Length: 193
Image 1 (cartoon, one colour):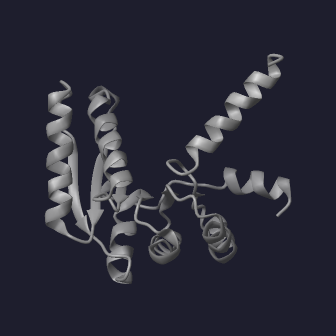
Image 2 (cartoon, one colour; image 1 turned 135 degrees about the vertical axis):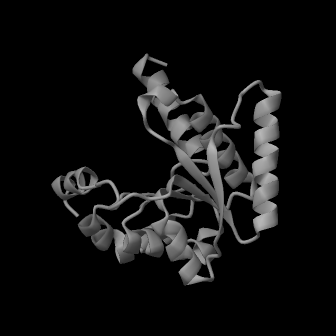
Protein backbone atom coordinates (compact mmCIF):
# COMPACT_ATOMS: atom_id res chain seq x y z
CA UNK A 1 0.00 0.00 0.00
CA UNK A 2 1.47 3.35 -0.99
CA UNK A 3 1.81 6.02 1.68
CA UNK A 4 -0.92 8.13 0.03
CA UNK A 5 -3.21 5.09 0.20
CA UNK A 6 -2.40 4.70 3.90
CA UNK A 7 -3.35 8.32 4.52
CA UNK A 8 -6.61 7.75 2.68
CA UNK A 9 -7.30 4.65 4.79
CA UNK A 10 -6.90 6.58 8.01
CA UNK A 11 -9.11 9.38 6.73
CA UNK A 12 -11.77 6.88 5.61
CA UNK A 13 -12.78 5.78 9.14
CA UNK A 14 -16.41 6.72 9.68
CA UNK A 15 -18.83 6.44 12.60
CA UNK A 16 -20.59 3.07 12.65
CA UNK A 17 -24.07 3.12 11.12
CA UNK A 18 -27.14 3.55 13.31
CA UNK A 19 -27.56 4.00 17.04
CA UNK A 20 -25.68 1.39 19.03
CA UNK A 21 -26.31 0.46 22.66
CA UNK A 22 -22.63 0.83 23.65
CA UNK A 23 -20.08 3.51 22.87
CA UNK A 24 -17.23 1.13 23.66
CA UNK A 25 -16.93 -2.54 24.55
CA UNK A 26 -13.99 -4.16 26.33
CA UNK A 27 -13.74 -7.81 25.25
CA UNK A 28 -11.61 -10.05 27.46
CA UNK A 29 -11.99 -7.84 30.52
CA UNK A 30 -11.36 -10.64 33.02
CA UNK A 31 -7.64 -10.86 32.27
CA UNK A 32 -5.00 -8.56 33.73
CA UNK A 33 -4.78 -6.23 30.72
CA UNK A 34 -8.52 -6.34 30.09
CA UNK A 35 -9.29 -5.36 33.66
CA UNK A 36 -6.87 -2.43 33.38
CA UNK A 37 -8.59 -1.28 30.18
CA UNK A 38 -12.03 -1.68 31.81
CA UNK A 39 -10.87 0.38 34.80
CA UNK A 40 -9.64 3.26 32.63
CA UNK A 41 -12.68 3.22 30.34
CA UNK A 42 -15.08 3.38 33.30
CA UNK A 43 -12.95 5.99 35.08
CA UNK A 44 -12.90 8.14 31.92
CA UNK A 45 -16.65 7.75 31.50
CA UNK A 46 -17.18 8.82 35.11
CA UNK A 47 -15.04 11.94 34.58
CA UNK A 48 -17.04 13.12 31.54
CA UNK A 49 -19.03 16.33 31.79
CA UNK A 50 -22.69 15.26 31.50
CA UNK A 51 -23.65 18.69 30.19
CA UNK A 52 -21.98 17.93 26.83
CA UNK A 53 -25.03 15.81 25.96
CA UNK A 54 -23.07 12.71 24.95
CA UNK A 55 -24.09 9.56 26.80
CA UNK A 56 -21.05 7.32 27.14
CA UNK A 57 -22.20 3.70 27.45
CA UNK A 58 -19.74 0.92 28.27
CA UNK A 59 -19.96 -2.83 27.73
CA UNK A 60 -17.70 -5.26 29.54
CA UNK A 61 -17.45 -8.61 27.84
CA UNK A 62 -16.10 -12.08 28.35
CA UNK A 63 -17.10 -15.73 28.26
CA UNK A 64 -18.40 -15.92 31.81
CA UNK A 65 -21.02 -13.45 33.08
CA UNK A 66 -20.14 -14.02 36.76
CA UNK A 67 -16.43 -13.33 36.19
CA UNK A 68 -17.24 -10.17 34.21
CA UNK A 69 -19.60 -9.04 37.00
CA UNK A 70 -16.80 -9.56 39.56
CA UNK A 71 -14.47 -7.42 37.43
CA UNK A 72 -17.12 -4.69 37.20
CA UNK A 73 -17.78 -4.79 40.96
CA UNK A 74 -14.04 -4.65 41.67
CA UNK A 75 -13.49 -1.71 39.33
CA UNK A 76 -16.40 0.22 40.85
CA UNK A 77 -15.13 -0.51 44.38
CA UNK A 78 -11.61 0.61 43.43
CA UNK A 79 -12.90 3.84 41.91
CA UNK A 80 -15.03 4.52 45.01
CA UNK A 81 -11.95 3.97 47.20
CA UNK A 82 -10.14 6.57 45.06
CA UNK A 83 -12.99 9.04 45.54
CA UNK A 84 -14.31 8.74 41.99
CA UNK A 85 -18.06 8.34 41.60
CA UNK A 86 -18.70 5.92 38.77
CA UNK A 87 -22.15 4.89 39.97
CA UNK A 88 -23.78 6.90 37.19
CA UNK A 89 -21.76 5.26 34.40
CA UNK A 90 -23.94 3.12 32.14
CA UNK A 91 -22.14 -0.26 32.13
CA UNK A 92 -23.62 -3.43 30.64
CA UNK A 93 -22.30 -6.97 30.57
CA UNK A 94 -22.26 -8.77 27.23
CA UNK A 95 -21.36 -12.45 27.17
CA UNK A 96 -19.21 -13.25 24.12
CA UNK A 97 -16.78 -16.02 23.26
CA UNK A 98 -14.19 -15.96 20.48
CA UNK A 99 -15.20 -19.53 19.56
CA UNK A 100 -18.83 -18.45 19.01
CA UNK A 101 -19.15 -16.30 15.88
CA UNK A 102 -22.74 -15.32 16.68
CA UNK A 103 -21.82 -13.93 20.09
CA UNK A 104 -18.93 -11.97 18.58
CA UNK A 105 -21.20 -10.51 15.89
CA UNK A 106 -23.73 -9.52 18.57
CA UNK A 107 -20.97 -7.82 20.59
CA UNK A 108 -19.56 -5.95 17.59
CA UNK A 109 -23.02 -4.90 16.38
CA UNK A 110 -23.83 -3.47 19.82
CA UNK A 111 -20.74 -1.23 20.01
CA UNK A 112 -19.19 1.68 18.16
CA UNK A 113 -15.67 0.67 19.24
CA UNK A 114 -14.50 -2.75 20.40
CA UNK A 115 -11.28 -3.04 22.42
CA UNK A 116 -10.02 -6.61 22.34
CA UNK A 117 -7.91 -7.78 25.26
CA UNK A 118 -8.42 -11.54 24.82
CA UNK A 119 -5.22 -13.26 23.89
CA UNK A 120 -3.17 -14.93 22.78
CA UNK A 121 -4.38 -13.16 19.67
CA UNK A 122 -3.04 -15.84 17.33
CA UNK A 123 -5.59 -18.18 18.91
CA UNK A 124 -8.48 -15.89 19.96
CA UNK A 125 -8.10 -12.61 18.10
CA UNK A 126 -9.44 -13.15 14.60
CA UNK A 127 -13.07 -13.55 15.67
CA UNK A 128 -13.16 -9.98 17.01
CA UNK A 129 -11.58 -8.45 13.89
CA UNK A 130 -13.86 -10.43 11.58
CA UNK A 131 -16.97 -9.38 13.54
CA UNK A 132 -15.89 -5.72 13.63
CA UNK A 133 -15.27 -5.57 9.88
CA UNK A 134 -18.60 -7.26 9.18
CA UNK A 135 -20.54 -4.98 11.54
CA UNK A 136 -18.79 -1.69 10.79
CA UNK A 137 -17.33 -1.43 14.30
CA UNK A 138 -13.96 0.22 14.94
CA UNK A 139 -11.38 -2.20 16.38
CA UNK A 140 -8.57 -1.66 18.90
CA UNK A 141 -6.40 -4.30 20.54
CA UNK A 142 -3.49 -4.65 22.93
CA UNK A 143 -1.53 -7.34 21.09
CA UNK A 144 2.17 -7.37 20.44
CA UNK A 145 1.97 -10.38 18.08
CA UNK A 146 3.52 -8.96 14.89
CA UNK A 147 3.01 -12.00 12.59
CA UNK A 148 -0.66 -12.21 13.61
CA UNK A 149 -1.26 -8.51 12.97
CA UNK A 150 0.45 -8.77 9.59
CA UNK A 151 -1.84 -11.67 8.67
CA UNK A 152 -4.98 -9.87 9.92
CA UNK A 153 -4.18 -6.69 7.98
CA UNK A 154 -3.59 -8.82 4.88
CA UNK A 155 -6.88 -10.66 5.31
CA UNK A 156 -9.14 -7.86 6.57
CA UNK A 157 -7.41 -4.54 5.82
CA UNK A 158 -8.98 -3.85 2.42
CA UNK A 159 -12.49 -4.80 3.58
CA UNK A 160 -12.08 -2.67 6.72
CA UNK A 161 -10.95 0.30 4.65
CA UNK A 162 -13.86 -0.15 2.26
CA UNK A 163 -16.28 -0.25 5.19
CA UNK A 164 -14.75 2.78 6.89
CA UNK A 165 -13.64 0.63 9.84
CA UNK A 166 -10.48 1.62 11.73
CA UNK A 167 -8.27 -1.32 12.68
CA UNK A 168 -5.91 -0.24 15.46
CA UNK A 169 -3.74 -3.12 16.66
CA UNK A 170 -0.75 -2.60 18.96
CA UNK A 171 -2.63 -0.01 21.03
CA UNK A 172 -0.77 -0.66 24.22
CA UNK A 173 0.59 -3.03 26.79
CA UNK A 174 3.07 -5.06 24.71
CA UNK A 175 3.96 -2.15 22.46
CA UNK A 176 4.05 0.84 24.79
CA UNK A 177 7.39 0.05 26.49
CA UNK A 178 9.22 -0.20 23.16
CA UNK A 179 7.51 2.89 21.75
CA UNK A 180 8.24 4.87 24.91
CA UNK A 181 11.85 3.69 24.87
CA UNK A 182 12.29 4.82 21.26
CA UNK A 183 10.69 8.18 22.04
CA UNK A 184 13.02 8.73 25.01
CA UNK A 185 16.08 7.70 22.97
CA UNK A 186 15.01 10.02 20.16
CA UNK A 187 14.63 12.90 22.62
CA UNK A 188 18.02 12.21 24.16
CA UNK A 189 19.72 12.06 20.75
CA UNK A 190 17.92 15.21 19.62
CA UNK A 191 19.20 17.12 22.64
CA UNK A 192 22.80 16.07 22.03
CA UNK A 193 22.68 13.14 24.50
